[in-house]
Length: 320
Image 1 (cartoon, helix red, strand yellow):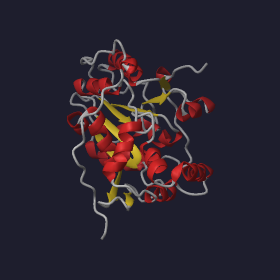
Image 2 (cartoon, rainbow, N blue to C red):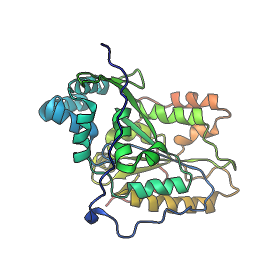
Image 3 (spheres, rainbow, N blue to C red):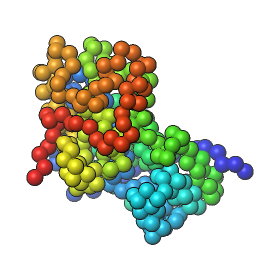
């Protein structure tokens, strides 16, 4: 019987974070009172959660950690595409979804300040979007469990879909894009810009925020105005090595505080002045389009071998 899209069962209430991990005085989630619209895009594995959802499943119910490490090296060396390797990894799973999810519940740790940051986004009408190379049913179930279904429902998940049979013998990714990536995060952000026509009601220019942790986030990061890279991980290492400006963060509380600072400074500088000078010119191409139909044209103008764009100095954290 051919596999069909999975229907997820109700998930139990998430466990509370241990007191030792709770921040004593989280930043305020109150409205900032600024005018420019802000849009947040965030990676999932290693960003919102410290672990990788796929790795937990592969290690426990699939190809195993040794084979997975070999496959990871094949991606890094260019021997095989991300899509090809991912199909092997997901195809190696043989576990019902509910059973596999038990491993995720016990092994995943959410960023201690993500829930507060998400409340901040809701209170400031900041759309928060997850952009991931993972599988949407897995990510949605994780969010439902850890932050609750109501809060989870307000987060758009832009990821690959999946077909999983009832017995868990077949896990098949349904790729978002038909290329070697399977999901081109940069293309997804441009699709969002085009389809949603993100323009605030008062005519100001939306500020695009991207939050990530790995080098695989670079294609999406170059479409943003402001990049946040988790401190000590691969994305920050890449930025340091290539002298690429970014803002380092340890938890989402750091991101929240920086967004408030940036938004207030930007509000003072840009009221009544049109396009500010402190926006990434690479990302601003789409804003100068006379209509939404011009957006894909600007995206196509970007060279395929472009590694990163020129970041605005105002959003740079010095590297010591």
